[in-house]
Amino acid sequence: MKKILLALPVCAALTLGGCSNMNNTQQRTLSAGAIGAAAGAIGTYVYDKHQQPKSNEVN
Image (cartoon, rainbow, N blue to C red; front, side):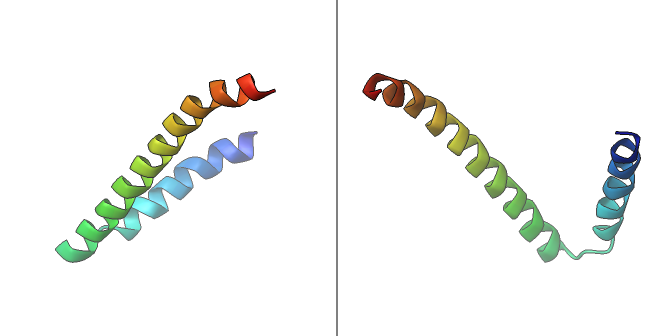
């Protein structure tokens, strides 16, 4: 568990450090991808929660 807690800030620092020298196009592309991934994850979660009551009725 301690190794995970140590690795998390290291990974975050490396990730943020890699974005420091991006041009505007690269930054917009990365932002759009992150927004799309978040929207997809939220949409999947909502759809799954909507479908769960229907799947319980069939059983």
